[in-house]
Image (cartoon, rainbow, N blue to C red; front, side, top):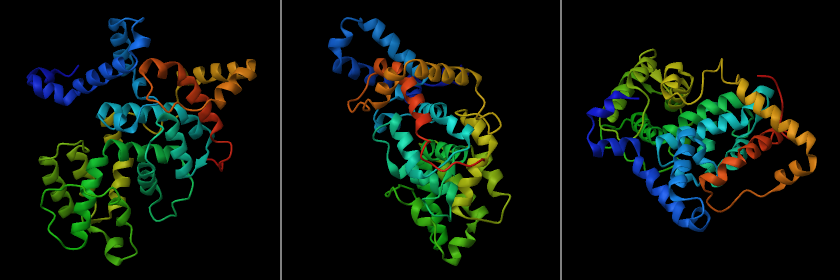
Length: 323
């Protein structure tokens, strides 16, 4: 456990850990499904709720506003996406952004297409948005895009100001969800990028007063001090590929270990064996419609295998090639 927590005030601790967010959500679900949980008992309900939070399964089939509500929820969602669909990476399949969006919506029904497109843009850069991508490339870009989404919006504004010669040393308040999409241009200035040192100074100033999550400044400095000029998506790709940043996040393993998980392989084999031995029941499970109502943690846990099953089937109509 982090010893620094003892130096925080009660208010700062609650703010940083978002404990109240989970308490409010637990109470909200208890009230919404009180008939179901009246038989279970309030004590056991809270025990199971916070157990699901601890294991990261609490985000399954929840609305996007809940997933985005805390850094832990974002990390849990990214980790769940990796665990559910990593078989795509093992198979070497290449999927388009629309197909990745479909996979994301199997876990979160209202997951916005815009975030998936922004993650794809980091990978594809100048290529057309309908080009297929490997699971590994998309996953690492998606991790940075979702976890640091507010930071990326803010630095997009700074970069745009530097590109046109404006002074970016003002309070940055993202006003548009499409800022990143506007930064790919055939203009000479956009191709050459901005002065890397000046860009770093602006980012350092931003982070001094920033309330949202951002990559560790020493790693940002390391990236930008290697070059004289940098483009926006070149900078984002450098963040995506930085092993130190990925290690600091601690959400998914390094590329060398990303597709290796003996426990998950054993679980997948059990699911496949169950399908082969019970073809009728498995077909019924696959054809069930995703729940449209906000699911509780108790309802999400037994459906995890269903997501794993659907992840295998989702690659049947996509292009396939080796990484």
